[in-house]
Every structure is written in C-alpha cells, then in structure tokens.
Length: 268
Image (cartoon, rainbow, N blue to C red):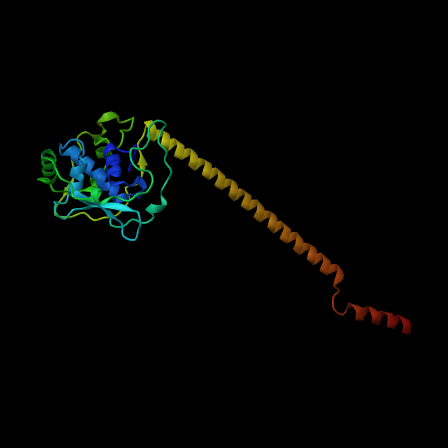
C-alpha cells in the first residue's frame, strides 16, 4: 500500500464497497502487481473490468470483514510469489487523514461487497485485447521481486525520491516465473509516498510517535521515582522497627545476672 492511493486502487475499493483497512496485505500486493504489469506490458492504465476478469474478491478465513484477491481458475494465473503466512500485520494499523480539500475517493467505513460487485465482468473488445496481452507470452510474474521501488515508481504507485528524479524506474524489466498459481496471504507494508499530501501524513505520524515516545518516557521516569520512594519507605520502616526492638527487648538472662550480683554484695 502506498499513499496517496493510486486512482486504480481507489476505484477498486469503491467498486467493491470496502475500506482500505479491510483489504489484507496480499490484496494490496495483487492490486499493485496488476498496475505494474499493465505498465510494463503496454496495456495502458489498469482497467478494473480486466482486473476482475483475472481476480475475484474473497473473504479471509476466520476473519469477519477482511478480504483479499484470488486468481480465478477459469483464466491463466498472472502472479506467483505471494507470502502464505504473515503474523502480526493486524497490529500495524495507523490513522491517516486526507489533506484539506482532498477527500477520500473510496469508502473509509467498513462495508460488504454486493453480489453485483463480485460477479464475473463482461469485457468489451478492447478489454478482452488487454486481457490477452497481459496473459500471453511472458510467463507468470514473481511478485517477490516484481514489486520493487523502481517498478512502483514507474507505474506511478509511488513517487520518485527527489534525489533520483524521474529516471529511477527506467529500464526495469519484469521478472517472471513459470507454471505456478499464486497463493493468498501477507502484508505489503503500508508506506506513504513522499511529498505532497503523503509527506504531510508522514510528518504528522512522526510527530504523533515522538509525542507518544515522550509520554512513555515520562511515565517510566515517574514509575522509577515511585519505586525508589517505596524502597526508601520500606527501609526506613525496617530501621525504625530494629531500633524499637533494640530499646525494648533485652537479651535473655540479663535479669538473672543483675539479681545474682545484688545477692553477692548482700552476703559480704
């Protein structure tokens, strides 16, 4: 996932009626891989009907409201190399707000796709030609290496770093694999694109994290002080108890010795 969202990503989310936070990491990988594939195979801007021709939205098992994309069995597989298991990705969410005057182009509240949204698409003649171009002649693409920073920049999913200019992605060749269908699951790592609204979002996130870190340090310092004070109080109480015991309690047998001394003096 990259911010700001690529228009194709926003259109796909809006079509299915789901929020960005509902799409599992492998779903983001498939969206990004499709956009990059369209770029390098000369298919033009990624087409939602063509994407739906190759992929179907599917709910994640044991996760109500979470979705990903799977390859349709009726068409050739485009991708391989998707991770099969990633732990802890549901704990890495963050709050993102759009810049003023630039509302989200997709839902932000969780929703459920309609039957119409998930039905098989009807391709026009031009869409069918694009589908053939994407699936013929070059093998199955390995997303482990295909979703490189330079390829994402080339497909306008990410913005080129200022130090690299616009030439960062030139000459990127799409790596391929053969004969494997893709598997489902794993995170794409939510990363905001630099500059513009994305840069503002990153700065806002950084400030929030710095404030949280400062607050945590203050709480730790306060806990250390309270622990030190408690130890001092316990030590003082123990010393006071020992002093009291030394004053009140006498060693055993001290009284008998004193009485014996008096009797000896009386006998003399």
